Image 1 (cartoon, rainbow, N blue to C red):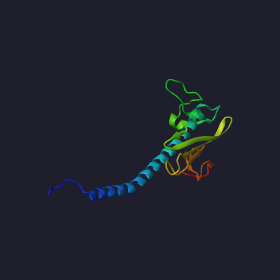
Image 2: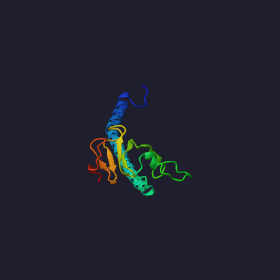
Image 3: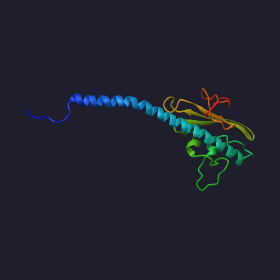
Image 4: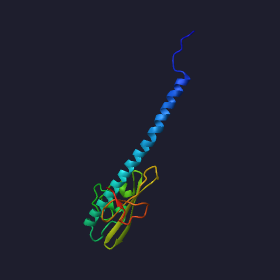
Length: 158
């Protein structure tokens, strides 16, 4: 008889089964880690927008707070900042979308504007994030229960 070299079909199936079991354990952990990273980036984005709003208010006191996210960003290469493009934040956050979260600026009121509300919500629930974040002019990042409910009294981030 000839001596055969290689793996049998049973041995290959066992190896494939072991790899699938390891993948089934690892993939949910990777997704949770990605969600945690996206949420961390969203909190950072809200903090960045708060800082940009405070800087905007200081630079343009007759206007007050910016009425649109695009006013806080802008193309700053070789161009002097204006109230329409103040260059206080990067274009990704100023466009309203970064790291699986959508950012909105609402509640700008007064002349000059003395109030605003920033919200960050996941673009894909349970895929890019599972929590909402918001802030008002007190610059405290908070976690509301649902989107669009930021009153400035929700639980702050620790």
